[in-house]
Amino acid sequence: MGKQARQLNEQEIEHAISSAKEDTVYGERDALCIMLTHLAGLRVCELASLRWDNFLNHNGAVQNAIRLTNDQTKRNKGRIVPLCDRLQEALAAFKPAGSFVHTTLVIRSKKGDFSPNSLSQRMSSVYARAGLQGASSHSGRRYLVNTMHDRLVPLRYVQEIVGHK
Image (cartoon, rainbow, N blue to C red):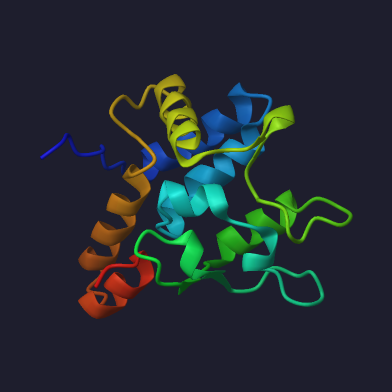
């Protein structure tokens, strides 16, 4: 078994988010990636493929859930992931103006879309710059699952949110 991603506590997550916003040209994007992995439990492959139309309604407003399609998930089984108020607000603030609905959410400047591998490397570097060694793109899923378990959320519901059987 490989080395597990470090699970961050709430203070470390907030530090990573604020550090991402301050440290990089793409700070808002990087902070949003951290939030989507920790607060929605997205896998990096799901995050890399996430499009605006996965969570915008027909009026262009952010909905209260992400609708992942079969081709965006690890097990080729689409699912609905609820969005907390904080994530809805962050997505609404990050939303660009104009025609963008079918574009990916996380874009690499002039290089186009991130691959899951390049996005994973990017997130690891953001965590490292924040002084959070051992944290990775998978840290958020560990945090979300364990937090929901600690709060006595039924296991079946946790499994549905993170896409496990």
